[in-house]
Image (cartoon, rainbow, N blue to C red; front, side, top):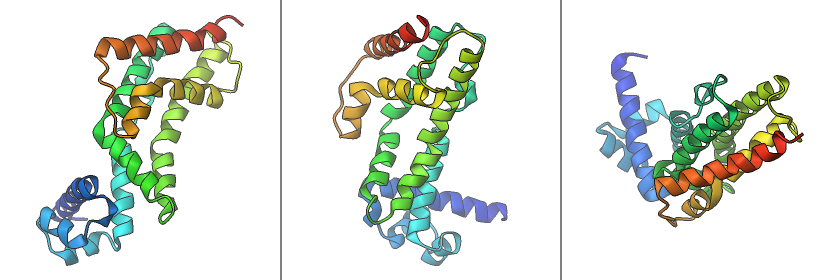
Amino acid sequence: MSSRSEKKRAQILEAAATLFTEQGYGVSMDSIARLAGVSKQTVYAHFKTKDLLFETCIQSKCVNHQIDQTALDLNMPIAEALVRFGMRFHTMLWQPEVQQTFRHAVSQLETHPTLAQIYLQSGPVKTTQVLSDYLQIKHNQGDITLTLNAQDSAMQLLLMFHGKAVYWGFLGHNCDLTQDERLKYIQDCVALFLSRALSN
């Protein structure tokens, strides 16, 4: 693909992401083409259907906000590492763009079930695996004793990290927590999680 073609594809994705966020799945390909500054034919040349364009937008957003192995430092005290990870995770989920991507995937669940699967695999599954791998290493090293398997332990902690702020946010309500309040909540989640993992 030429650099010019890549640039047009990027323009289309950016325009589509903007309009899908503003108007939902019902936005027309004509509108996307206008905002991208390309012809409708060019849009279809890159994305054969609106479904494919929508799926690519969701996958792209998940990848852009993805948390990878760099989020957890194996040399850092475990409580500190988990708090830092929790804050990064919580901050990511708090972003309007991330919440809107989640809503789009859910809103199209009945008509386009593959979208939810793409969102799940590109976002939550990868994040859970990153934390699971870290917890398994710490368990193998004897730093903690997991009462569940690493995958379930990671999911348990991630769902705790969501908390009211993120859950309410997905439903369009802002809890207006301060940075200190968010940090205190994440610290308490980690302390609660480790109270079992360190006591065995």
